[in-house]
Image (cartoon, one colour):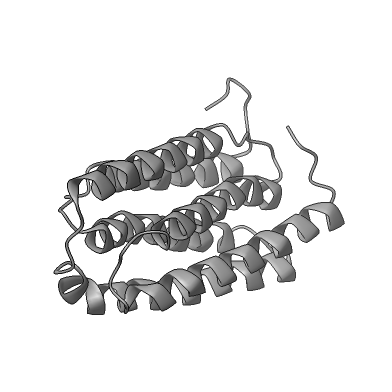
Length: 191
């Protein structure tokens, strides 16, 4: 966290965000991978989605902006459903095996996406404007999910996972557009 002093409310928001981010990074990097891309996507995306839910619940404690409250509520609802669906299909999807070559190229691409996302989220910047901070943190989070889903669709995966990935792309691209519009409306300057 920067040397700058923040209000007690902002400090509490940032402490929670940092804890969520740390848990997400640990969950995604320490996920137990197998010889199934379908399995590997699921075990890396579940901690990613859990972080989005926790981040949204965190901002809901502090914001009175109705548009942002709706965005955060949508994230909680959509990503909770997505986690439930991934848990339902995880065992069956894990049975579809991929070649060592596919697995190596896939994970290399996913790791690059994760590292960019982790960096951007770690360096989103902190201000006294929690609403703006949240969007600067959540946009790269959503962009990471879209990129990971797009890459995964390029490989042999179980058919039940395909619609999950497509929903992630659609819902999170919509969320990115909504947050970018709101950033302009409430004048969130880039740091």
